Length: 311
Image (cartoon, rainbow, N blue to C red):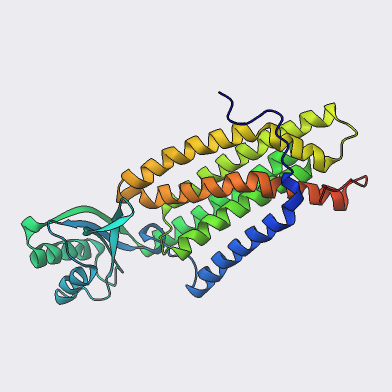
């Protein structure tokens, strides 16, 4: 069964300025959201503190959980709904609080007892308790940032050696685009950044660059076949020839991750959300960001004048 015709000839680069402007707008919205909120909302892994995931036997509210903790002396706790199937169940909650000056173990045990006394030991289930000191959190935050930055730098160097600088520049620009779009989506939807999300960012980077390399590899093959063809037309031809592979791969991964997002539970909900955004952004940037950036670089700094894309 042929889903996409082999002779398809869509001029993807014709509207490249529009799509790049759209991406710039989306990234700007995300950055504004981050600035307004004072940066990303780091989870316990990076910010340090105590995290308790609990389930009540009967539906209740975040205000009630907060009240129970406050009455037992735990003021300032942040209580959020844990999401199942995209909805707040009213029974699953995440509680975050600073460690303060006391012993972390005492805070953990005290918070657990407060919740059990407030709701009744047989009416509450403590599903997860995480405890991270502030120094460890800062160290993990630094290492997580370096992990993403070094991955992008290594990809830039490898692609510059494997192809040409203009292609590596386009590929890395697309990767920055994907990470910034996903980070902005997390800020806008008030989601936390923790270690699993850093893993999701690195997964997005690997997925997106793989798609981009497939197109650039086809461009290199076509350069040998069509030596007189303008680069803009040759890139369009290469994108069209690999479009079937791009759509089928992205569609399969998206459907699989959507199942994780809907049915995987609260523990991997944010991880699956990051991948959903990253898959869409990565597929989009492969076509509308990576190739246009490479083309614009060649048109401005190339050795010979190129015929621009048809408009």
